[in-house]
Length: 333
Ligand code: TYM
Image (cartoon, protein in one colour):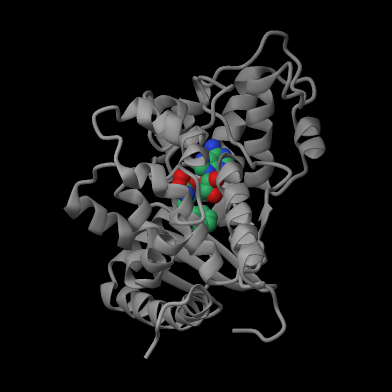
């Protein structure tokens, strides 16, 4: 922990296969911020069970996500990496915050409405309570900033509302967190349907690039990506959503600005462009996958990271929860 530094919090659910949207919108930014903040990065397995999971797969994906965090460059020596269910304060604070959240607000959440439509046979209370658990995650650590993709903005806003509501009823208790959304890549879109976000659970897997895709698959998917009418390779999300999405991806994976990316393709056709984007992505994914596999072979090391992460996280979380219990009048021994 670094004294005097602000706190940063974020998490990913260990569900399905992660896409380059998760990497660009979240994990990649964590790496560039880890030296400047006290960072907590969780594996949100309690959020994951709001949709039915296969238990063996959930266990395996939990460890695999930890290995991915580290393979992407998130340093366990600098950051607290832990599994959400290892720190019981998340569920405990969630319960308290439930009493500061209105049913109507939760019913209006876009993700709740989307997931309810997709899982109509299992619209469980957890699915509806999902944003409150997310608020508990963030507020337990008194996070100042939360780097996430734009799809999480509504959840972040409700976390701020809940924090403010609690602070107003009692005395200031929670830091009110700010969302951090990157200029390029806060919303990576589906390759076949560039008006929709790229998703882990997309119906057609050809529209998503999974971090586990091999080089041939990556190239094949980019070759099939939808482009727009006209032939110019220009960043114009309104009129050229397909091309603009590909330019964002290229820019992030090559470290170039969008303007530099556009220059790389002046006078070139869509075919060359799509191949170049595919190659830029595959060149990064292949070593990332090798590193993740190497880490996964050392379960003892990964377990050690999680044990120490849970211990540190628990200390901070317990401090906040105790403050909250005191304020609301829970008798403590
Ligand atoms: P999850 O697992 O759905 O996604 C993880 C992160 O990836 C971002 N993301 C994207 N960014 C850009 N383009 C995309 N197409 C794209 N798809 C996903 C998400 O915005 C997110 O940052 N509820 C969260 C996990 C969570 C959390 C938290 C996050 C639980 N507690 C506390 C922050 C703070 C989620 O489901 O992320």
